[in-house]
Image: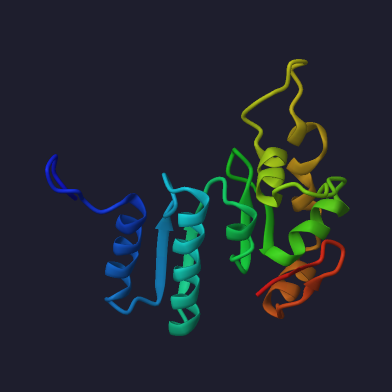
Length: 173
């Protein structure tokens, strides 16, 4: 932790130490609430990359909430549960499928935009624009997921294998 005279460990080191401490117990499921909070994008990527590598090595399920990930950090995730501000599901499935899903509901991802930031902007219904309108409410994102055929969504999620998203040139891992 440190004191005025002795330098303590950095924020990134504290996060890595916390994760490492939890992993020592040989967990099967690890819940992480904002493990990158307060870190810059490079440190956030390193923390999440470490967590991902350990999870794959130990066959560990990691459930993490993360705010404002960089594109590189976002692409470390295999699956995504995207919640609207009221807690309703806006998307649940492989990260590689989120681009085609958002395109299918009228929100194609623009080139050169952080996908996580774009998606968060679309589902955040806590704010309105200068005209008092709300993008997520006005464009049908509130009901698009509810209309999705659940049997297809569940079957495709269970049969998930890493595939390339050719529309965006991304690959899931």
